[in-house]
Amino acid sequence: MNTKFSEALLARKQAGFIPVIPDIKCTSPKEGDLLQGRDPVEAAKLLAAAGAPALSVVTEPKNFGGSLALLERIAEATALPVLRKDFINCEEDLLLTKACGAEAILLICALQTPPLLAKLYQEALKIGLEPLVETHTQEELILAGKIGAKLVGINNRNILELEIDDGTVSATALLAKYKPKDALLISESSLQTPAQARAAVQAGSDAVLVGTAIWQAENMVERYLAFSQGMGDFINGQHQSENMRFEK
Image (cartoon, rainbow, N blue to C red; front, side):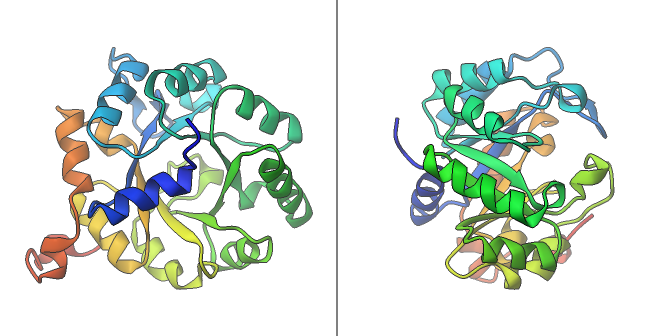
């Protein structure tokens, strides 16, 4: 499997769907246990079968219950391009990520000095990892552009608060216009409804990353499909009601 993470997202978008990246995480600092007895690998396989173009796997163990072993199992089980989400801060992390089968790596602006961010970005490219540069402010988006980022995320929450703050997708609406030229933009976190996913895309996102809302649904696959529905109804002027506004 050699499909790039970004290419998989673009192919899904060109097929008329909102590219929704399921976020495979075991626990949430805000919501607690998300698995509720479910096997995350089996859940990942179900979401892949439902049309997910790519997956995100949180490997941070202390606050999110993840592991590199989980990343490796999901990469093997789904054959989809997988993003590793963790607090990456050294080249060894990049090598371990590649060895576990990931195609992409999260680099968080707020955790790095600009020189280190630029170094990790280039080293990731050298070993065949696609860096997703995560931002939360206008300044960080400008920095992402300076290092040449082509895959950029806007985290609607503050990762320095472990995503327990009350972020809203309005952050994407405010910041999307500052994305680097020709970059593929992903809206991350705080997307609780399909309406919010469509609103994020209308604001300028090319894809969305959704975790908790899918895990808390009675039927994960149905919830995923609802999020990934295309923009046709929205563009045609239907459903232009209160629920299409950015919601908390």
